[in-house]
Length: 566
Image (cartoon, rainbow, N blue to C red; front, side, top):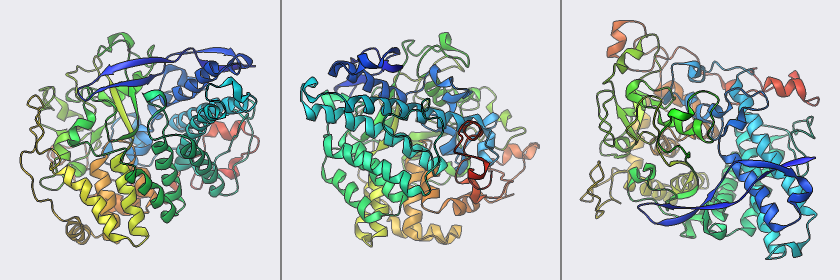
């Protein structure tokens, strides 16, 4: 039997305007015999890099019948953004804006196969690692545990993605792969799924340090394990336990908010102080995309880069159009809007390109899901349609801002309102530019805040917002989620946060009222860019369907085991 292993571990010294850091570089992998992998620490380290490889999209992800898998995986671009209606589309992915997906939608299979591919690699590694003698490792048992901790954390990350999207899923453990264990039932309760995730991450947190092994950014750390463990506990409504873990991250002083919000998305600034975990991607082709065109790309990371960085003044073909509702929801003085989106008629401050300069308004015809507001988080290069991309390209998978907002939520749930509002205050102080005061960056196109300003009190503002919109949720719950909406727009998390906190139905109904606005297809639609929602919220769509292919091939899962509503 053969196992997948990365051919080599190499280091890349990436120069940024911040500092010089070592990065974990993930190359193409080769197929090597399993017994060879477990003969030495070097070889098993190579197998571990094969597990890290699964964080990145590549052409190999189109295997196993998952058509277009790179569109739907790593992270879940459409699945985590579109159902909020804040991020919108007009093509084949419009179904995800209208809750019109089915169990046969290829994106679900892509997520399923992609996650189990990662889990299978981790399980293969963990099984072989168990039989290796401690003296094969330079640090003995401690070195062996470090490899185990990283593999288990990567496995937990993928099970967390599966649990958030599908609920109960088959739990393959060490030695079990998607190939050798094609049939396994779903556990009886979701708690069984969560417990595996929590145990894996707790082990990782007990072994790993705050700083990455060998100084290689991209490695799993203690912060990664504690942050995602806290998230899993929040799904179980174990807020006191989650708060303790989040407080440990905060008190470690390992991370801090980047002073300028816009810095987070600067291609020249990778792995900043706010990144608990990120993936930094690039192609050997540089910014030139012309040699990697088509839907069967020849370059790793192609889809991620292209999907997020299409030239929006040419209408784009990614799905990171932002709604007018989201654009208009920012408070006066909140600098996050100018740093993360540009609307029809406005000019991208980094490229000088103007939205609508090439006829983009016409895409409104026949679709309410093209509002012509583009994400500046992913459009920092002067690009032409389908030809250039941002390089390098950073996906912020877990930011310190998210740790603070999760801490705020847990604080409110446990009766600690003071800590909750203080965490929100920290987020808003940065958002209004007060952390920028004193920075000198004359080449940056958005001028830094020169004087400290008074930030509106969050509790006062959201009390008024609740009354105006008609929310029944607690003021603090609205505050936490609306700050997430503005902080993480187009960052692939809002849907999960809204549905976990129970706010998704009110959010859709109140932020995007059904039938309000102008239906597309008429001249009047060009003057009314509100999202024209025609569908009713469906609670059964809050978990995605088990892919039909899994039901057909897994003897332990039948149609009767499908999630409700499908």
